[in-house]
Image (tube, rainbow, N blue to C red):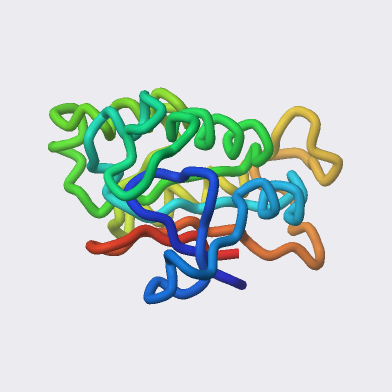
Length: 165
């Protein structure tokens, strides 16, 4: 498993070392092309930011982003069918935070889970759920484990967000 950081919203670059985030960038396109669609993606973060960071070019608080964060979240959502978001913010606050609502609209409202024991259990069940076109599909809701595949995990901390692969 590897990890990559981002700040607030996913944009055109990620970084391996949060202390070197302005010097050692990795293009998000490289990650989307390197890890196949059979990888599982887990975002971990509060998804709390200015809605402009998600909806407008130039909305980032750190740099000029040519495309809105929503464009990058949508790309990840299209590439990785098995994607969940773990949110440390209490579930009761989600509907009152516009950026959380925007992220849920993009990734799917049933793919964000609270960062609790029950939320982790629900997220893992969602990642294991069979999809209609899954070649490993069998009867029931849980698919056989796919060999040699690691999870791609996007995470967040209070000061910066991260992507684990």
